[in-house]
Length: 104
Image 1: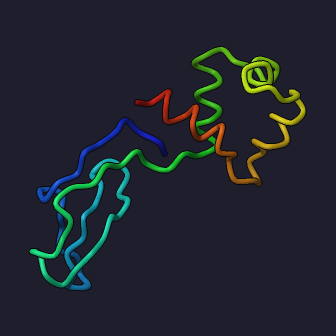
Image 2 (image 1 turned 90 degrees about the vertical axis):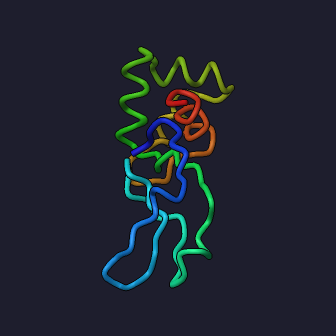
Image 3 (image 1 turned 180 degrees about the vertical axis):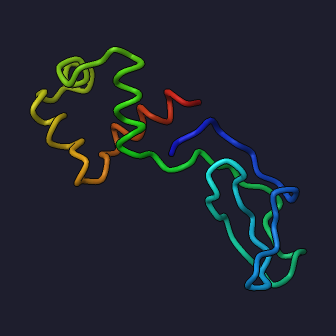
């Protein structure tokens, strides 16, 4: 799930059952490093989440975009948009860029 940019700091460090300190996003749970020593943890990180195909569908719906519209924006064919954004494939970089712009 992609989400609005979340600045993580030392208040987001949690100690887990493995005995390690983890810098963890409170929104999506993504980990940004771990250490046995709290003082060795990063001072901050920024999390946007991980883009998913569900995010892609929600983006298109909210914006009222079709594959034809997106194809015109980025200069490829509607069939290429459909092919490249199939749920059995990783989202292409251009789609991920659109999602980050949408959420932030």
